[in-house]
Image 1 (tube, rainbow over the protein chains, first blue to last red):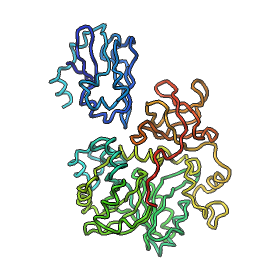
Image 2 (cartoon, each protein chain N blue to C red; image 1 turned 180 degrees about the vertical axis):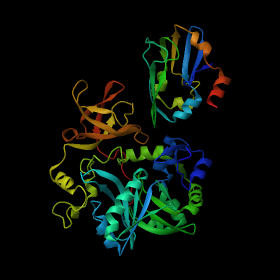
Image 3 (cartoon, each protein chain N blue to C red; image 1 turned 90 degrees about the vertical axis):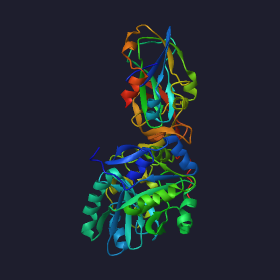
Image 4 (tube, helix red, strand yellow; image 1 turned 135 degrees about the vertical axis):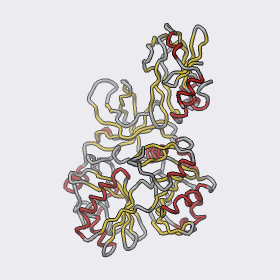
Length: 119
Length: 374
């Protein structure tokens, strides 16, 4: 698993990459009450705001971690946003994408690096 | 962070694992276990809130009637007619009819106790000193007491274990109660829409009292996050969001706080700042007013979201002043201002969120029925 400074995790599954937010991010957000995901088939650009996530207290954006195409989204977290607090690094993945440029993944942190990053 | 003030419960907040945020110059807990859990705890059991950042001010003078007469020159309320041992909500108004702050004031027999918002307290005290000291009324900020709110259906059982007389108090009663051997100034009030108490306790005993209450079944700590969602569901105004120096009490839907004796035709008509604006508004109405709004979708719409009459095109007609997720409602809720002809429950309007206009419905306030012990 790879991690971004934007508190996303990326699981490389060969052709596609699964993306979600980290446990640390979910805890910082607090109770998640609303998630808006991009449509399947959307071509996204790295650092583009593609997900809206709202906790009781505030709204946040999630950025596309890579260039590529959204190939699947997790409707379950749209129906039950609290899943994002319950299992952010498992069942509550956000979307799967087919990257057109995987190079930025080489720069991303591993688990140990991310833990050091969040201190 | 070092320039932030702290309350007497600061160390306890840290011990309880609070996430602290700067608020009105104080380091305050925004949440302990999570806003949803704390909100629900307050509606179903009892929440303990540290509101020590708020201003507690004593007005003293020859007698209560003299103090109340002076106070009425600043606040459009019937203070003279308030019985000893009772509290009321009131508004400090300005010359243009706007609201400088909202507050609670109590007849404590020989003096008046006023509780004002944290962010406004320096200005409020200056305003009261300027207006009241020439009338022989002394304005003294209380700086050696904490203020704790205990809110929810579990508040009465909890507090009456320490002082059985607490159970005898009705909504908006005030009394001095001995709690754990200390004289506390207690009112049966709060800002959550629930029954409960606000307890002014000497700072040295505040932590011990808070611990005693927190040890009781069903009582847990609650931060500012849930305080905000609770008051929003209860349809209560947040100063500087839903009311402010450019909104009048009439626009804000707070006419009820201006008793008849101070309105046109009353025995003590007018005589407060902005009366020449506010009294005619009571008679002939205003072009815009505060409303409750329920977004029809699931996305919360927060303060600043601009409102439109139509899903496309057209001029802005209003704005959301408070909004978020209502845990008891189970969906997003908001308050804002709309033209009077749109301020009818059931009317559909549109809020612009992230470039899209999404529907909301005008809703009666409160969103969650109040649970006061009248």
